[in-house]
Amino acid sequence: MTLPLSTPTDLSRRSTLASQQEAPAMQIPTPSRPIVSFQDVTKSYGSFTVLDHLNLDVAPGEKVAIIGPSGSGKSTLLRVLMTLEGIDQGQIRVEDDSLTHMPNRNGVLVPANDRHIRRVRGKIGMVFQSFNLFPHMTALQNVIEAPVQVLGMNPKEARERAADLLELVGLGNKLDHYPSQLSGGQQQRVAIARALAMRPKVMLFDEVTSALDPELCGEVLNVIRKLGAEHNLTMLMVTHQMGFAREFADRVCFFYKGQIHEQGTPAQIFENPQQERTCAFLSAVKEAN
Amino acid sequence: MTLFDWSYAAQILPDLLRASLNTVGITLIGFLIAIVLGLFLAIGRRSRKFWLSWPATAVIEFIRSTPLLIQVYFLYYVLPNYGLSLTAMQVGILGIGLHYACYIAEVYRSGLDAVPRAQWEAVTALNIAPYDAYRNIILPQALRPIVPPLGNYLVAMLKDTPVLSAITVVEIMQQAKNIGSEHFRYLEPITLVGLFFLALSLALAYLVRRLETRMELR
Image (tube, rainbow over the protein chains, first blue to last red):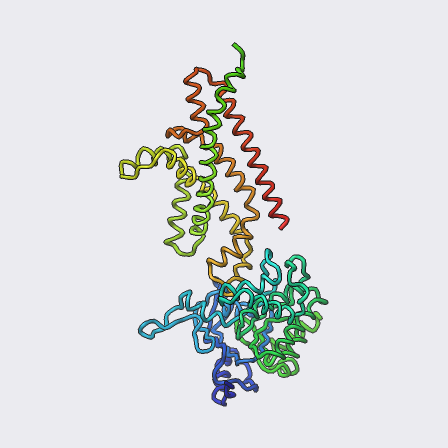
């Protein structure tokens, strides 16, 4: 089903949501039914507020790049969506389900239990900065494990799919290699295949090239490009690769102090940023490069 | 009278060897209980559920803080008053298994704590249920570094089996004492028992080292 593009009302709602951050209104169309929706989400570590009443809607199939300085809440955004961290306030929705809450018998929303979280979380996949492969398993076993255990897939079918996925990420000849026998870029590609094996609707990439030597970044980014071109996956990626964000993303969100300080198309953000802090960040990144 | 009577030693050896089978049996079955129960205690102690972590912690700390001798005395002489009557051998195996389960639980805990948090995050991101996560992902990584301390506890357990002679379990030490009191000569039986423990401890240590090497190679 193709979701209708957003109406002006939706856009103004999004704009209102983002208005706390005084971000300019976006000019990119968004659907009325987002696949991921952060609603007034707040997350603190002690007195440090990492996500501050954050609102963000992501459309199905949309590629969102999240940029910003360290400690601005970029990774935390992905981590709370993956339920690696809890939230203090607000609600996160994935498709029609709340990830953080569930209705009780009386229809009142209460904090979600493990079973509910597991069901909703199954729609999301994540790739980590440090790969997090299982070191005692081969590349193939890493990709097979979850489909067999979680989806109940037949091991033979899982093996065939895993081999296909590893082929997709260019590692068809490394099926029986252990992570320690692979380069960082290869490990990260196995991690992407492993996440894809769970058939997620939303993929989260958390600084997936930050731990890699510059010459290995390309191979990982190429895989992501390929996924973007060939599959209608929704992607949220925290990245420091501005060139990649500019080329690949439909929307760029600049995070600052736990809020979306500014967002827009790559052209808007990189060529004509409106906020002073965004300009300063982009200049600093440019200088560093 | 010779200092060490070799013919007397040869004469009592078969009886001691027969009793040594009990020692080996108690050690092996007790160790099996300890490594299985210890794992559950460790996982219970690490649980975020208070009703699980609190009793597990209480059991571990209580048993580790009281002597094995008192525990087996209690099991053998006190529990029958409350309707639970077990043979000396059953109490011996259960007592030593339970005692070492609590030590081994702490070994497991250290191994589990050593598995990087990132592995748990990967497990969560892949939506793998806790049981499958422990079985296929976390434990295989946690076990490798704890094989040496587990081996130490196996040897320690073997050397603790003579404590069970206090509740009339006829293991090798009890048999040696019986033989000694029968012939009024303790040097040979006790020496043989010492040599038996030395030989078996060295053999077990060797086997554990072999296992360790094998796991490292994998």
